[in-house]
Length: 418
Ligand SMILES: [Zn+2]
Image (cartoon, rainbow, N blue to C red; front, side, top):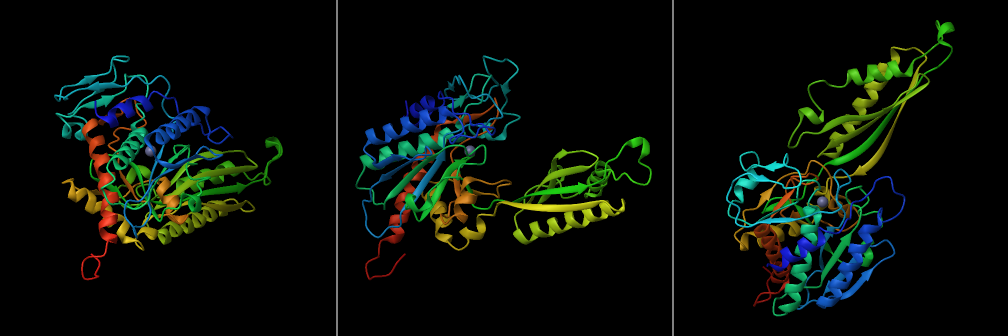
């Protein structure tokens, strides 16, 4: 069995589902079990400085075999999505997948069909891993974890491969948006990093949304409805008018794709006296995000003005920013990833992420961090699957990427640099 597959099958059997409602860190104890076991495994492989900090973050070093090479990091998260059961995962390996329907044994209604899943049709002939029908698989992001540990093992066993210090981090609670909450960038001591948490072979992601949360509140006036004439100001009606003023055919999740941003009201707390609408605002361009917020302020005022005396206010909370704003200043980070894939004959697929990653936040915390593929498919779903050959390729990309950085750092004969 390929070493990355052996590890992957082992890791997915840990229940590491994270929980948004929890107030502990990590949010669930199961994550700590895997994190501690990963630290022990890294130690047994001979990795250096293996630590589990007070928040559960595991870090380790593959010591440099070459001098003057920047320190780069590889990062993956151990938690799985709260949206789908993650306990009792029973992984199934479908050897040399022949393109026929894959019905999962524990729930016959869950069927993977190559005709409906283009990425699966692309991997006919590969060994495909699925769950058994009642849980997610957890390839997001245990594939990345297995690939990084396997690359560590390979680099330690092949010290003739030139590379700088390689830093490793395994993190909790990415799926509940807290993956970088306690990430100590200074202690990590890497100049650049990569999250290994992407989809199809060749994916390289270095643009994410810029994201804010906005709360629009309408302050009305409540009184006994039998004696309210000329006095009551119904905040629910003002909020409804506001929602109705949002652009109906543009700027919503259901009408946008690729580089288009949106405004998305997703929850409301309603009362006559006071109604608040919570929205998320997304755009790839931060000033365009701010334009959308100005539009929201204008529409809120317009809605409130229909109810003389009713007041509205708007609060903006920054969530994350497009990592490209940082990565454009460090083009070598994405260039080295492209080169590593090209050396391996992998077709590079670059596309914007219509969301954020831990790398979006890390980039703005001082650690430029694009995302590279791990092979994850249909994540957060009972139809989640992954190709073993994609996992093997991701291991090769990690090893080659370490080497590309060393090749670029090494002075050429004559003193020039490549
Ligand atoms: Zn993930």
